[in-house]
Length: 272
Ligand SMILES: C[S@@+](CC[C@H](N)C(=O)[O-])C[C@H]1O[C@@H](n2cnc3c(N)ncnc32)[C@H](O)[C@@H]1O
Ligand SMILES: *[C@@H]1O[C@H](CO)[C@@H](O)[C@H](O)[C@H]1NC(C)=O
Image (cartoon, rainbow, N blue to C red; front, side):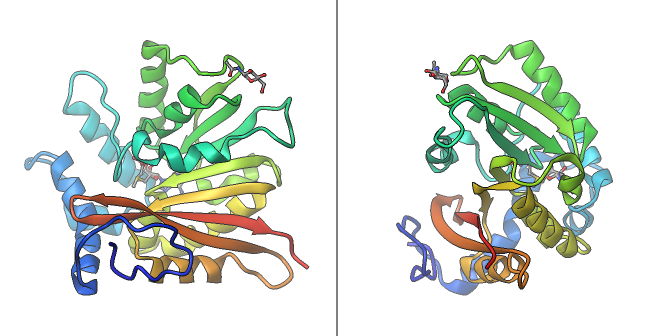
């Protein structure tokens, strides 16, 4: 069971082991380990620099340039885990109810070169418009090329998939309010929160998400951050007296390589 299993909202427990100090140590090291696995020892990357600058476009342009240059054929890079690990968390949100004729609007925020967005497009029985957005044009181009060569087919023939270069701190410049049914974020808010100058951006991104989400919509953050820290952050940042409010919850996704992962759900609540 994950450390701190008495979280208010946790519905199930799956992780084994660890004292609190152990877990937070693993958590802090996880990104480092992930990066070490991914990059060759000869990489010009300075890891500490990478972690401090995960809010910067230039960092990710370098990251995706390097990771893609290491293999002749394209390979999705997955932060934490792939689509299959989170499929059961996402699918329940893809039910057409209030707008049976319209495509469900799904945004993968900071998609990188993950197969998460394409996975939703491929497997959703309900017709979806999946937009995969990333600040790095390198990642966006890699994905555009990849889906073109793979000719990925959707479950529902009405579904659409697109990749766009977009700074998610500026979501509201690109989308009207109340348009998104689901926003998924795998590791993006984590990256912002961990970097030296990213905390303000993380808070901005969250606020913009709440604005562009429909009242029936949700934001799902997949993260390895401890619920004690993330729930408090979400509850604090998602409230603005008289302007916005949200309900916040967490479920355990599971344990991988000794790290416990969570799915944080944020749902806008009407302001009274
Ligand atoms: C930790 S990676 C996760 C990538 C992907 N979601 C996955 O699961 O593999 C964080 C991603 O967020 C992107 N990113 C960072 N800041 C961003 C911003 N302001 N707007 C959009 N994407 C951003 C990075 O380019 C990077 O691809
Ligand atoms: C695609 O979506 C439409 C509209 O919701 C639905 O009527 C149809 O059955 C779906 N097709 C498949 C193959 O699921």
